[in-house]
Amino acid sequence: MTHTLVTCITATQTQLVDEQLVFSFDAFCRASGANGTQVHALVEEGLLHPGGAGPLAWQFTGPSVTRARTTLRLARELEVSLHAAAIVMDLLDEIDVLRRRR
Image (cartoon, rainbow, N blue to C red; front, side, top):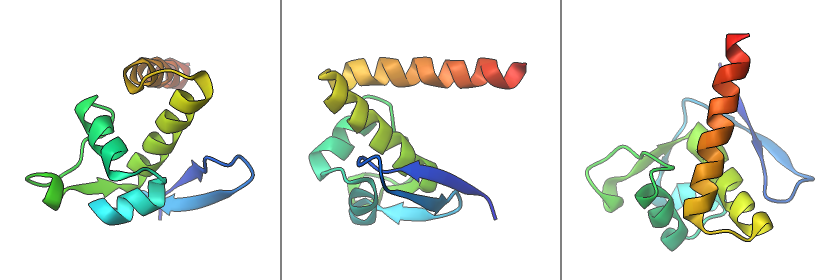
């Protein structure tokens, strides 16, 4: 079983989220700590790619929880828009790719 470490918005708490898990919209909001408006914004910014035909049928994977929490934390702590946080996330993704190439 593969797991992703999910760092909660409060830095003192962590939990494991199975990469195979699938979350409904409401369950994703609870797991990620995001409200519905924030989730819609994360999808619009291209940070999340839910499955399903539309918001009522959206399904999110375990790694999406990590991505949402990290993005929202960056936006809050750096006091930047979600668009700016999306750019930071893209750069972090690129760094991860480069590190794996070594």
